[in-house]
Length: 477
Image 1 (cartoon, helix red, strand yellow):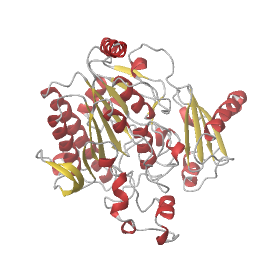
Image 2 (cartoon, one colour):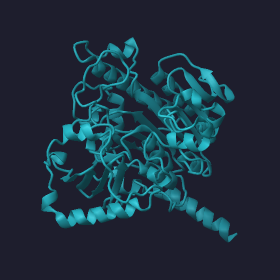
Image 3 (cartoon, rainbow, N blue to C red):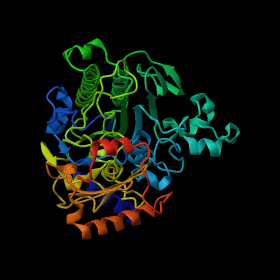
Image 4 (spheres, rainbow, N blue to C red):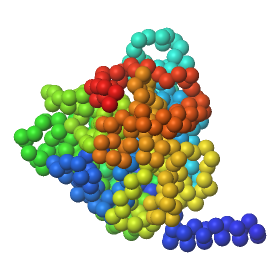
């Protein structure tokens, strides 16, 4: 009886704190979208994202929102686990898939009574770049310089697919082939590959809309992982016609793809309103990393590898770098029933915080193994402090830590300290002015590094990223 009463008190307190029952949760994750490319961030004039802008204007726009890595796989692993991906060895794309013993947001929310679903890009199963995993799990292939996608038997991938990682309903895919447990017509399936014709971003939106309609008896969690504006660039005439032809072709494609995603955000909110769930749905909108500028933003022919047309303005750097351009991304949280409207939040937050926020608003106890924090008390003004004492990054030969407004960056033998809250941000190195602060931050970074699966005794040397640092940071500025 005492246990029952305690449970009732907890439920009552939760309902009183947030004003209602468990909220629905939707996480929209775009792919290689730079900070500039939502209108609400006010950096460019050619973008058209009225629905995303409305999401920001009617919610909270976080201007110091960070991804955990400047690359697809590790960034997604950090988001979905709520843990620094280096803790389990997924430092970058060319190592391992997301380990099966890591617990995802979806699995945790299932235990809280949520129906879970996802659509779009997954990219967390073994692939031909998962070199470390291949050597360990497929020794018959030997050690080669490169592997092909066909080298990995599909049955080896199945345990790592979204349908086996806590998602009740999946529509996982990139273009027209989808690993699905339902169709866009509402038919339930045993997990299988299906062919779905249509423009990929529209298809991924339709999969999310169908999920909401079929699971409107809340609570639900949906991860909408748009495959855009990542290359290969593609857009239908409907979206291309919204932008003039007298601009770089790759930029026009990016704008069209972002317009398609924006239409999708509008459709999601309209569907939520239609089923009476708009007010009590938390909606995150975040990019996985900064845009790949390829240094010169060359408008190269074709739609394949190269600049994806997106922009990181005003930040320095690009995908692959842990300078601001590679990791500081669009970040919006909207919850009509639980957050203020039109708020701009400047303190540093991370994609690590998504998992912790989701779990606590769902009624779960805070898990000590998570590296993120519940953002809601900070965004609604209940807590007036930085959510994190320090945020860390490690990628290839780069290390960084942000403490308050200061960011320490070590890239090979290059060493910087920046005040990233100022207009000059990473254009002015102030490391000589703050030796004691730098020493303290380096100790914190070294201590964190020792908690990771593959700690390093010394800071790494620049490899693939060397040309970027020579271009963006030509001198010890």
